[in-house]
Length: 272
Image (cartoon, rainbow, N blue to C red; front, side):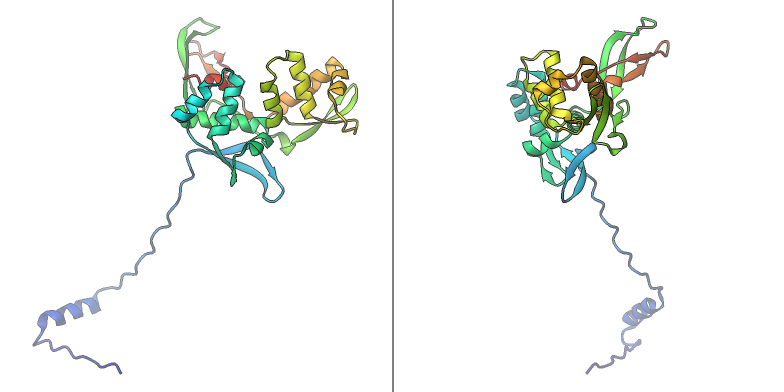
């Protein structure tokens, strides 16, 4: 049973004064601690296309890391620019969504998503600033350096109308086409002994899903297409392919203000 204690102010004036002050002072409610906001990793990337997953739907994020000395040694052992980029991709992409970035997962990504990841790896490793030149403005011949910011000066194209497959009307009829993925891109990179027309055949074989509803698309079927049909399909793929549009970079001349085309390639961005 609780007992009451009486404070004798005469015998303990200091304690009595303290208790009175506490009783008369306004009550201050304690404020909850602010929530801790966890910033996303520096290497977080938004994919312009995304990876279709039967359980998670469309995965639109990925994570990359900067390149290390071990990566540099591995890349240096490859004597081909295209294969060097494949090596960089396979080593420095950490995750696609919550999935580990295995070779199979990377091969399933659209080529434009893979290019977006390479751009992110470049920024994580060397930063976003690129200096071109000195060079001359084609309009006024003024010599200058051009400063490009990969964050601000590179347009990122999204998948057009969410269409990952589309139909091209050709002389042969209706051709159903898909956007190129990593497997197609790797086949092109590894075809080092092919000429440009043979590379076009490889690309078309990897992207054509059906012709007039017939899904049997062999190399011979692709070769039998007219040159015009082949070029129309290739143009449709190029026009719709998502990702960073490095070939469209332009900067204003510091002297005359004329826009100067400054196309870049991913291989050039890693030549530091």
